[in-house]
Amino acid sequence: INAGVTDFTITDNVAGSSSAYGANTTGISVQNGASDYYIIANNNTHGAGTEISDLGTGTHKSVPGQILGTGTNGTANVGYVGEIITGNLANASATALSNGSPKDIVSISLTAGDWDADGSVCIQPTATTTISFLTGWLSTTSATLPASPPEPNAGGLFWLTVTFSQGQNQVLPTGTKRFSLSTTATLFLSCQCSFAASTNAAYGFVRARRVR
Image (tube, rainbow, N blue to C red; front, top):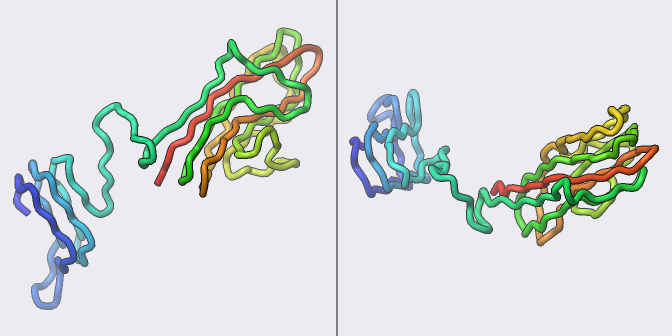
């Protein structure tokens, strides 16, 4: 396809090398230039080098193996791939913790679909509080440890048995976990902490992105 050609569709064709026409370097080639508004799909392509070479510089096109990213700073619409949902509990509103008890920090509602989620757990002890254990996780079950002793929780968990500096805030990421949902569900960012001498609280951030 010559440079600058627009508004075309190539579908359900055989293109490229064959016994009749010999070897071609590329099955389908869009030359370098301002080609735009086209679709290349469902073709049987053969090439000695590349099956499909797309050098068109337009932005309104659909080509196998390529998903055009947005060129703006907007957000994906509800229900579309790339949709993002977030939840945040600020440090000024940190929720009080009880020693050794699981606690939800913040939650978001996710509709049916395939989501990747991650979060950050922030611990806010008072000046004299000592901490010897801390875990945080993502789950669709409220205030419940995924497993004990710890399991990886498909990536959405951290687990630390360590003495932290007295009275110092800690911020730790949960990692990313997939949630494949058949119906609307609540996603919880939760934590559990072992501490002594004084009081402790938690705040945090959770987000999920629709991946397909």
